[in-house]
Amino acid sequence: MTAALNAMTETSQAMANPTLEELSELYSAQHRECWLCEKIASKISAGKELSEDDTWHFSSCILSWEHLNNI
Image (cartoon, rainbow, N blue to C red; front, top):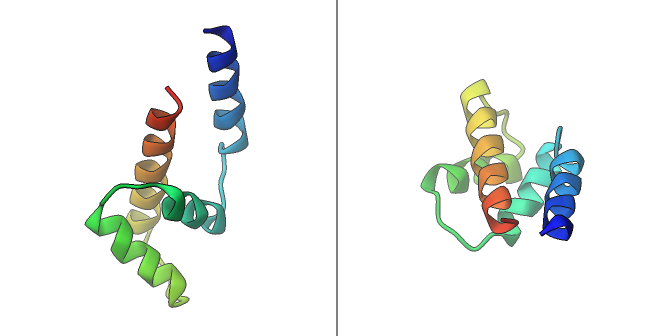
């Protein structure tokens, strides 16, 4: 249990302030569906600017799924 907790802590610290590139990589590796994340990832790939709401959703949705996979 301690090893799992340490791994979660390390992942949380490493992802405290992820870049859009890091978030995009995580999103690509996750096996799930979120229509809004898909739309935002397309914007990033096209080099379009993201709104504050897009950035918030993309970050929180991806990091939440990443955390759930590490429990």
